Image (cartoon, rainbow, N blue to C red):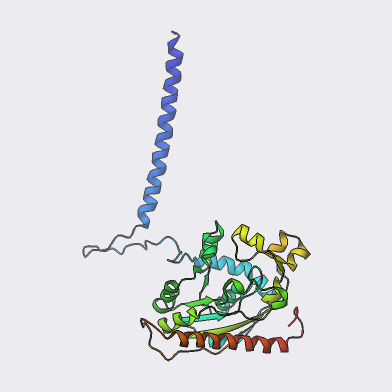
Length: 316
């Protein structure tokens, strides 16, 4: 064997290995192509004799919500809802079993605990999905944004709300206090902030759906803020940077996610309808502001009434 023969044999082995790797890669690409083709919707023609298979391989809807993920979340959250927060409802009959409606609630807790309680309660009690509107901040967070969308979160934009309410007849949850609600400190609890400029009222008018106020008691005590750092908020780009009682008790890491076992009580108030035609180009701004303030006052009054009846933060 000449000196060059071992090199040639080695080179031939390398070529064979490269061919084998290429073949394996092509086979993998072919499998992916087959899977992708199965997702493509092929329009039915008049010559088709056999029914086409359902092209949808995922339950993720156009908003990113996944009923599979929601079902997993409901199973995981049920012990928290039932045994930790021990949530009870009044007036669930005011929420319609079909058709669109805009659910409006007060907002609280440094990391808000009210949205999952409301969404879980309505979905388990009434078997209706609820889409929660929230700031773009949630959508922009890596990983968190994806899971937030899978669980029913939608960016708070008038067009999104209109499509869900008017075109798709869904239940939509909104917190008009925005970040000012959960940003309240302990001494400001249960004092509702302004409901913005009443945008939720205009959306309900345009979509022709009722507004259903919900008063939530218990969220304020689940993660109360004892102090806020404006410098840290500016540095992180967050609307507020809280130090909570939970962090003082459980430590900075666990306290950021562990809630106190405050008992939740939720009171659904009668639907509010507006005697205006839907889909108008413009609505009276003064009327919108007045109606928004009326909704805020109803929720505030209900909260004061519930607080008067409460005997214990932990037992109701």
